[in-house]
Amino acid sequence: MDIPSSVIDLIKRSIEEDLGHGDITTRLVIPDESESRALFIAKDNFILAGFPFAKEVFTILDPAIIFKTFYNEGDRARKGSVLGEVTGRTHSILAGERVSLNMLQRLSGIATRTRQFVDAVSGLKTRIVDTRKTIPGHRFMEKYAVRMGGGNNHRFGLYDGILIKDNHIESVGSLKEAVQRAKAGNYLAKIEVEVESLKDVKEAIEAGADIVMLDNMSVEDMRKAVRIAHGKIKTEASGNIKLKKVREIAETGVDVISVGALTHSVRAADISMKIVG
Image (cartoon, rainbow, N blue to C red; front, side, top):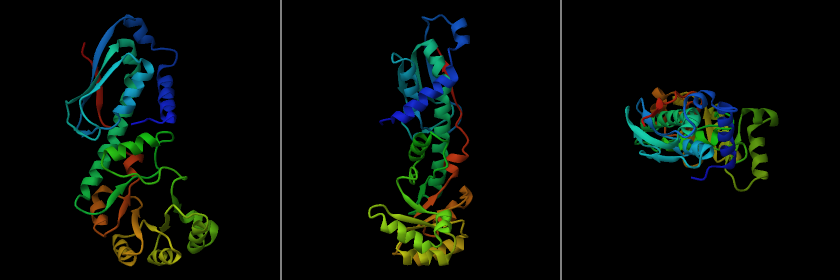
């Protein structure tokens, strides 16, 4: 995977934030020439994601570091598993420990949460997708983690997908007018419209939209919306989607369910790095 330069810059800034002008503890306690081997160890069960970025941390700090992984991205890690190892200068290993773990833990947490949602709708046609509710600057990594968990990416930003939401409609004056303006200025991208009622679904279809986002609708109304949209327009369920209800929502027949909780409120996986020699 090619890591974008913006993400590499972010990793560099993360290292600078933690390392500052140097690790004073390591400098005082450990000889400069010391070399070590350290293991990444799973302290919980989770879906692994983030090693390409963790490796980049050590590449930036010290190109001589040897970085090995024993699990593939998207694999299910079990408590006690040795996930990977770094070998080289002890100062470099300790300088990269926290930044690499922070990335691995959060991204694995996202992948794990995503897999829970994906497994919950297993056997149905519905796809689980993410949202733009990501930590500023971390979107590339967080959406990568969603894919490693078996989910799909929604639009990456405001620039790569047309999604007409309530504030657009309010500013323009009507759903129909907003769709018509979007169609007049675009001939490639699909047009998605956020709707809150069955009336809005019908209006979006008549206006020529390609997708309707069923925002915070009841399951019964979603079911009716899918019947109205059948063969005419794609459907997406959205709005505070909970794991315990996601299968029921998928059973309405919606094509996509977008879940902000995949990224905005996950619990980080528990991973440690232990020097063993």
